[in-house]
Length: 135
Image (cartoon, rainbow, N blue to C red; front, side, top):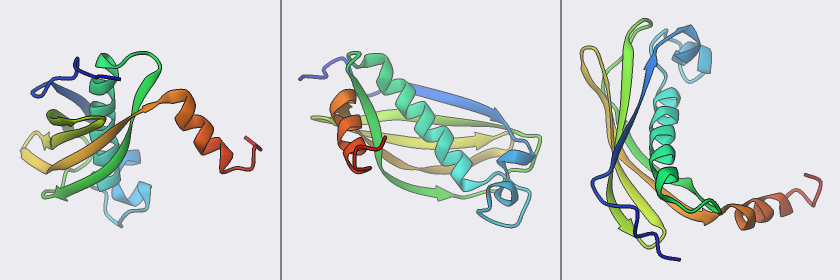
C-alpha cells in the first residue's frame, strides 16, 4: 500500500490548560505540581496520531514506536501548553515527526517521535493473540 497522501511538512497541534491532574505529582512521575513529562508525551502523540489519521485509508492507523525527547522547562498549573508536530520524513510505513511544546513563557519540550502505519484489524488481532484469545 502506498501512503503518498502523507506529505513532509504537514503540521498539527494540540493545546491544554494545565490542571492539577496534569502534574508530575498527580501522574506519579515526580513530586512537584508542574506539568508532567508523560502528559506532554501524550499531547505530542495525540497531535501526531491525529495528523496521520487524516491521510490514511480507513483500514489503517498509526502506532507510536519511538520517542527521543527533552523536557527543558517547567510549566505550573494554570498555563496553557501547545504541543506541535511536523512530519519531517516518510519512509515506507515509518513516519518521523519533529515535536515541540510551548507554554506562555516559551519552549518547554522538543525532540522526535516515530510512528508506524499498520492495518487496524491485523494489528489488533496480533495484540489480542497475546492474551490467549481471552480478549
